[in-house]
Amino acid sequence: MAKINSLEELRKIRSDAKEAMTARSGNAKVRVFASMGTVGIAGGAREALKALINELEKRNFHDVEIIEGGSMGLDREEPIIRVLRDGFETTYGKVTPDMARQIVAQHIINGQMISEWVIARNEK
Image (tube, rainbow, N blue to C red; front, side):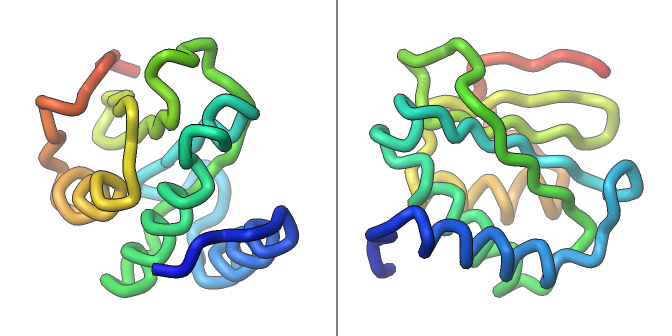
């Protein structure tokens, strides 16, 4: 997988993903929150988000809303991905691109969280 070399490339990925994802706000089966603060970006959040988006596209899964935000206040755990599915919010820490792909396959699509990577889980 090619490395993201500029903010413009990340914006293009985001734009492409928004076009590919047909779910509208509030109607998606799954919501994914990506921490894109400076610490997260320095830790590899761009690459993890790109891998997550690519895996969703590869698997043709469109019932998801991706929301990018700033730091979640857990700098030690960055990059962070939160998945809101089936009434539970699950937070994954230190997410690598490979982990992001596995989170898509197991949790986002199939509803099976990956316990060993979870740093927090709350009922919503």
